[in-house]
Image (cartoon, protein in one colour):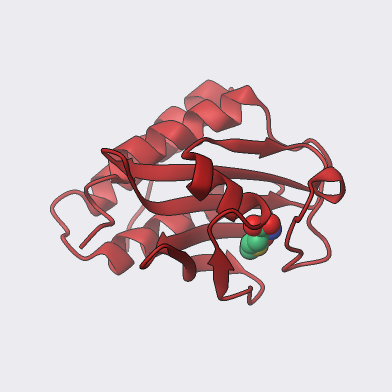
Amino acid sequence: MYTFDISTGSKAALYRDILSAIDAITAGEPDAIANMANAAAILWEYLPDLNWAGFYRNLNEELVLGPFMGKAACIRIPLGKGVCGAAAATRATQLVEDVHAFPGHIACDVASRSELVVPILDGERVVAVIDLDSPTPARFDREDAAGVEAIARLLSDRVNR
Ligand code: SME
């Protein structure tokens, strides 16, 4: 059993502790799926107000569903399609306050109202994306984006084998 000491005092402290928990549990483990699975579990357990948290992997320039927590989701997303595909195609974080206003948003769970997708890069290559969905409009802000971007940097060489 793993136990983590996660502070909920401020968003910065929350992301600092989530990063350190994901660091601890993925350090030294070479299997990408195992590392994504544990990272998804930690994000899901400690980030409030989510209805989906997980990964899509970039396999031959197509996003394929990876480890996640939440409802069963769409399996394959072409680069450039939806919020995940936009993050992968542009290699840039997508912070979407209202998914209904995002052209081409893919509704895997009708409850989703806002979304944060962060690419995991290995140099120029997009290895995967981290996708967080919330039932609350504008759930995510720049602090969430920065927190998840730090997690993406940590995972860069831990989710590509
Ligand atoms: N909404 C995403 C699809 C993935 S699900 O939210 C899990 C998108 O538009 O890319």
